Length: 241
Ligand code: NJP
Image 1 (cartoon, protein in one colour):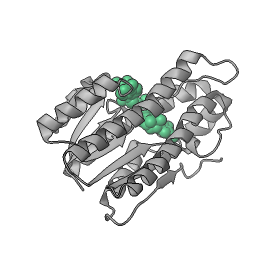
Image 2: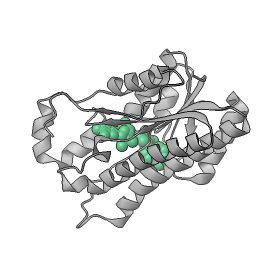
Image 3: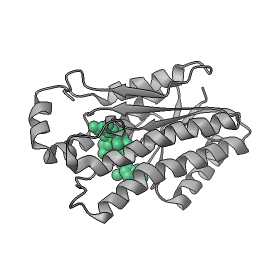
Image 4: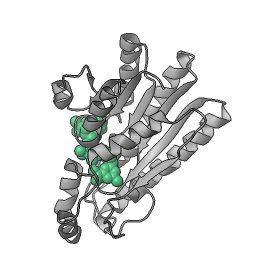
């Protein structure tokens, strides 16, 4: 399906791995993030583009630039996301706002602009993959991440909502989400600092790797047009809850 993929939040962790795996599979990749030096270091033809996904103007400009440079984008991987240690009783409004702006608004802005450029190219197929989370399906036992979980519950709603809107308009664009438990990235490192009990558990049990996630994305992209996978929910095998 398609030839050009845009991976958001591609300067670290899962996004950076996605750029490597998708490129190895013959897909032309663009990686965006606010700091693009790690993307620029990849020597595999990936295009690096500086963009804050929560900024409407920057996202619109990115899609215009990609239309001019590459003819457009066929696959959007909404991977950019963040969490703050920010309990509901004492957390800061600024941290909640940032999670809302990136995890929900950024994903929605990128999706809208992606679909509009497909429409303007008269392309009827394409793929949107949203990076959701295990925490978008069940309330975490760690109260410090309830606001983050709320943003990922929103991603679950947006994935299904988008599927329904696309089907209602007769579009052939597919949409899926991936909902992982803990993945070994800098994100995990930051989370572990704040979760003493979980830290002990995860230090002695393997968590998911970025390759596990990129393999799942490649599987989604390999499905035939008549198959719609809604969600890949994946945990480390030894995860307790
Ligand atoms: O995160 P990390 P992961 N505009 O921190 C970028 C979900 N997930 O790879 O802008 C554009 O290593 C940031 O780049 P920069 C998680 O919720 C993870 O682990 O330069 N980009 C960086 O490239 C997220 O949706 C786990 O700072 C922005 C990237 O996002 C996705 O997986 C578990 C941005 C974050 O890299 C990737 O997470 C789970 C902005 N405004 C779900 N703000 C896990 N790791 O355990 C941030 O269930 N970025």
